[in-house]
Length: 164
Image 1 (cartoon, rainbow, N blue to C red):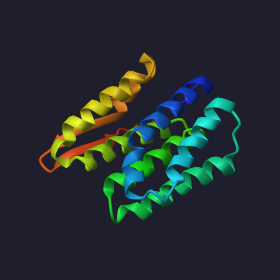
Image 2 (image 1 turned 90 degrees about the horizontal axis):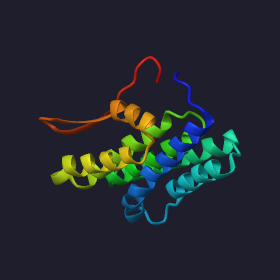
Image 3 (image 1 turned 90 degrees about the vertical axis):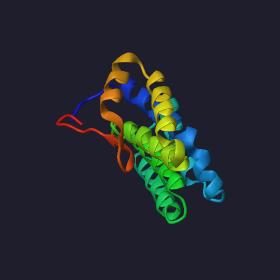
Image 4 (image 1 turned 60 degrees about the vertical axis):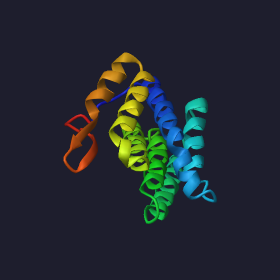
């Protein structure tokens, strides 16, 4: 697995949190009573700011956000993906590559929220996401998180290889 410096991991975590926060309204509109994805983003930001890492707290925040995603899935794919983005972002404190999952699910959330304009919306968001990273991480992001148009519609993927 590729290793990142502690500073790179913090940059990636903050970036993942920012990606998730941009789509969080999609979840909160669908499930306003459920604060678990927002709490996951806050836990991620707290780790970035303080450097204090308690695996039990990070794991709980991530699992809670993913549980919120499962609860939303039956009603709203965009809300589900937005919650998953938060769960992946906070997990970056444990494994840096989870930041790419935050980006991936944010893109999926936006595409699901506007199927008619999914390609344009996702492409614009991917461009915004890329601009938030330092060049050396941006290059990796552009290789890893890919949007493709297929005959069935938009397809977002995270490319994994031997060092992922």
